[in-house]
Length: 122
Image (cartoon, rainbow, N blue to C red; front, side, top):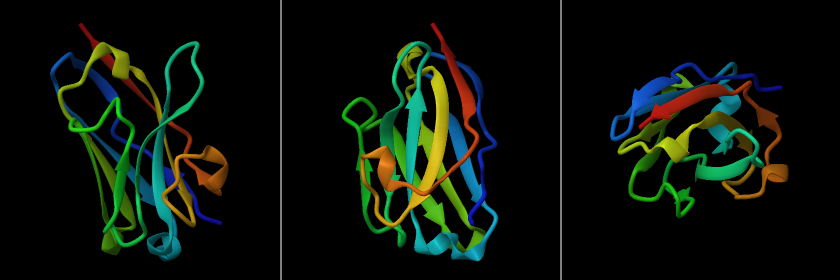
């Protein structure tokens, strides 16, 4: 079992930045790919970004490409999502998830965090 915790959410004005953190309970976290997903009010949860276990490959949804950066520090069992140039439409609950490969499909991930709220005001 891998438990994931996501501190780092909050509120920011449009154009601002936030960094989300996904911290894992076990050192085996370094063997997992990690995905970031988000769910806006009244909408389905959607893929935002993902990173391979080594950090060598990253993937982004078109809606966040060029503004969000996913990275990881395996020595600290932590994955980060740096979010810049935030827009009101980025408002959502953000979840990190761990799985064997950095895929878009939610079903590919075995472990999920509890989610953290990000609110972007105009």
